Image 1 (spheres, rainbow, N blue to C red):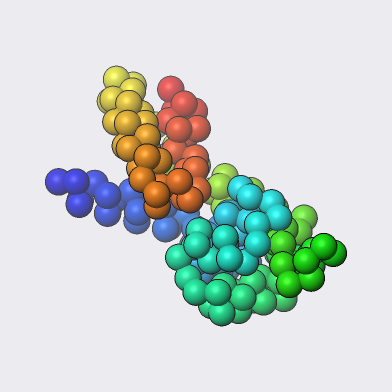
Image 2: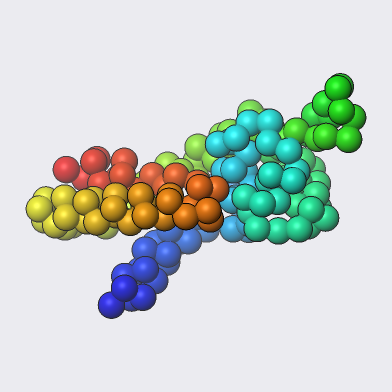
Length: 154
């Protein structure tokens, strides 16, 4: 049952990502943008850890995001080897659109649920999120807008 519920949520989440207005990006590219937004000035090493890729792969990923005008790299004057990453205005707009689309997709489903069931879901997802946050992997994951969608559906 947990696998089926998870699949339904992932399918809804992924569908919202695909439905987001251009630019069309891979899940990994979106994850990198969301991570860079959450941690402005993150360096390549930490971004690689957050998205779970190697440094060379993260560098190439950033090359593509930079070429698309979504990300910019700043070389640190004190340590010219360290590169810090920041979203551009266009990058912020793209992430805003993605998060809005995901929230709407979840909201559209939740609105069809009874209010007491939404409250139960919120309670369960909050407990799940706290448990995930207690793990090393969970400390690096982006915060999903599910809570906002649940609150909007009330």
